[in-house]
Length: 206
Image (tube, rainbow, N blue to C red; front, top):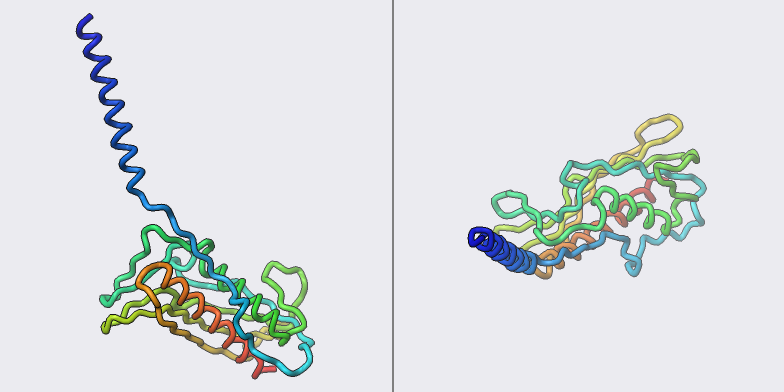
């Protein structure tokens, strides 16, 4: 009888101890911050004085390394070692968000009669292919840091499948604070700058 009571008492103490330690453990975990990568609706878009274009362009899925197909927010230190912010994530994968930005800014530019996503059943005159080469928060030797977006674009004639032109564009924006909030703000600016520069480049090809 004594052994039975002792066993129940010990089991109860273990349960209480587990509950206390588990509570302390979960309380020590910081909440996850979610950041979005989206078109700068209030930014000045490339201006085209001509009438709206008559051709249709399709935005092919943006390609990129495995690091850009997840939601981690990466930073690279002076040793060229890549890390991710522990308690911060993108709402969507950078390759998908960048494609949304390209579609939105190209659509607002008036450069084309229509801007189609890759899932569209309609036929386009041109296809814009792109690869995301660099994307993240980079720390320099002098202590400064920047949000960098680098992309390579291919403008393709969809009828002949011929390459019309290629262009590599990069934007570097200063990071105001050395944390995920500062990094994502700078990366957003850089992504929108690259998209706007892409519109200007495509305007020279029409």
